[in-house]
Length: 258
Image (cartoon, rainbow, N blue to C red; front, side, top):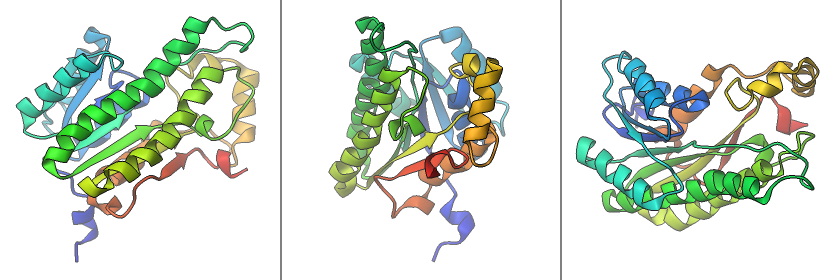
């Protein structure tokens, strides 16, 4: 029987983190680097990506590879996965984190804004997952962690219909992929964060009334600390979760318990 330390040991594995240049994507990449994982980070903004990679390399001498990539471009994603495998020999973990949002009443929102959010948040997740899964099938093992949201499960007052719809899609896509790829020893789960400080939530947090609403609506009475997400991503990346697939882990201070 494995020890607890062995169950959480992912040293030497290789992870790809999309949306890895900002927000919680940086947190996920940092957590993996701290565990001795080779980390590939991708995003569209190359300069910011290089800066994050430089900082990550200071974490226990981690090997970090930044690759600029648009997750809605399947050819670009295929090239990124190939480069990852060429560099490190395998792709063991995918953290499907790239995302965007649009906030506006549904009756007024331009259709292009709707399409952009769906393309990045849902189609991008699908593309990255299936391209990664092709490699993982060859290996006979892999971990895919989709980043959903509490708003894939509940609604709210923020007029972000495409975001809510896309994250709801990620929730059920996670379950579908988990069933489809289980025979290949590919585990597919999702993390559904509540409110954490990031570029996306920045404007919401700046409004005092909204910020107070979020805290009062959360049973723990606070917004999340980015470090609160590290344990979740390492759990789903490690052998400790080898009998868990198709599950959604809410890291939300109790928001969805109400």
